[in-house]
Image (cartoon, rainbow, N blue to C red; front, side, top):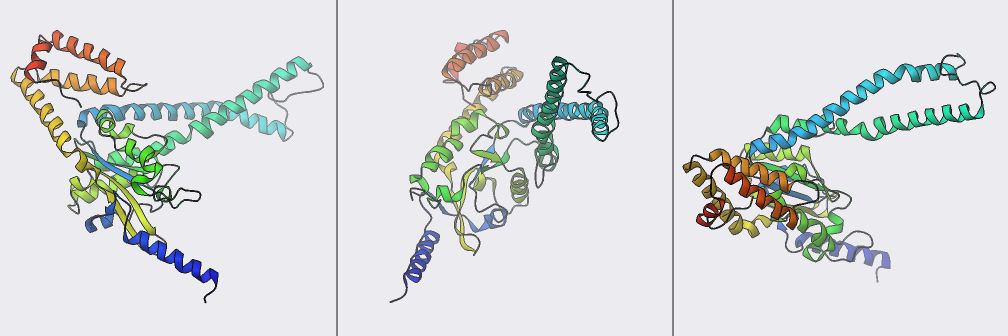
Length: 352
């Protein structure tokens, strides 16, 4: 009879083979044509792809805000470094035995003044630590972080009406979703608590409709800008279709180190096919009707208002929705359009 250690190894190998052969529902083996793209993904992470169909002009406006914010931070840090460096240099010279204006003479200074100078200097050190250690990395990650950053992503893909977004799990990963993590319950796929609390909210169609992809970063998912560039170029070169990444969840099943595994996918876009098509057709009908009335600009003003309100801090609550409905009605009335009659002819206003 073989030793227990060998028995455990055989059981572990059999268990691993079983997991590799059958991904947990609702996942299935990813299409072979996506292998070139998936090979650039980290097998320890869970990925969510979706296609953002918000207008390109709106995405450009949204993106302008972090560009401006990070540019201001860079200028602030540069100004602070320029103005404070001589002071720190003087402190360093004083420590090295070269008295100057920053030197504190303990013997001839009262305790009150001494405490004030020490507290003032500590506050200065703390302020600069926060600015350069905590705030400083923000513009670095935005403008220069590798292998990908928001600027390189936009430089390579531009702004499009249909954009591919790739989100990667943050603080959890494939082992958690597959029930293989230490201390995990063993429940995998749709039975995993991570599927219900992390994956399902990430692919919620209402959330994706209300927010552009750039605003979907949270505590559970981060944007993988390098992967977004790769995915866009992959589709542009006709290696795959846009529909294959319309809304999908990818996880690596098996042992990546020994290549005893493969990528599995949950093509959750199929769940929304009917409702998404209906919603898109209603928006097109809405725009065509306004265009026929010579009010095409009203359509874009409506889109901008809805997007602004739905992306405002605090979420698109019921109270905010009621308030937004009032603003939409006033917007139509200001343009000389009877909102109630228009909505009735359209059989209700579309949601975006």
